[in-house]
Image 1 (cartoon, rainbow, N blue to C red):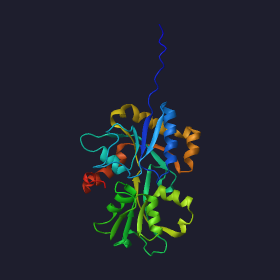
Image 2 (image 1 turned 180 degrees about the vertical axis):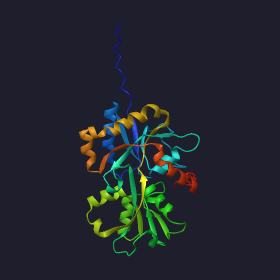
Image 3 (image 1 turned 90 degrees about the horizontal axis):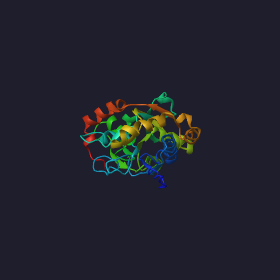
Length: 278
């Protein structure tokens, strides 16, 4: 006798981005919609905007089985893959944004920004100034600055909560300098042309390896290559191309963990992977 029991549809995968709203949520929605179509599995997108990824002391949604795919900043990736029980694995495909400095590589920069009416010409001129940063898990907003200067260089450090809030703090005179993700700054300048008059980039730190896409470790053997293939093939999806073009996404490029190896060595040497992310 033939069974008439309906076939159960697999539950949607959950993707979690820690990079919005600095990079627009719509960008990640377009990416996960494409990946879902490509792998034949619906994907739900959730945004966590309080920090740029889990580190020491933070809830790990991958370990808890609450997310299968993640968009995180590299310090979080390095933390989540350190120690004896890594909870995520790198997807071997990285964002390539439309910045001439990238030369088509999966990189980005930390742009050191001040108000245009200030006289500083480089980071070295900013000793004793007030730094505004988005959060202490961010490569471009926080760690890049710490790596570039000696301890006690800044007179004070103020956590603003986001790159956009750091820009507002600069404009309002609450901070003297901020390090802004170069792709975020490009989008902000495109949306607000007056920023080109009011703010000035005095130095660019980097290039840094692009923020990684990760998958939950226990699903990595199947999911990581499938997601990578989908991302690398996104150029053939007209809908995805049209939806992401306005956000400066050029393509995806093949990557490996080696892209982050030097960053890992620096973080281990400086103790950043053992420091609590506040």
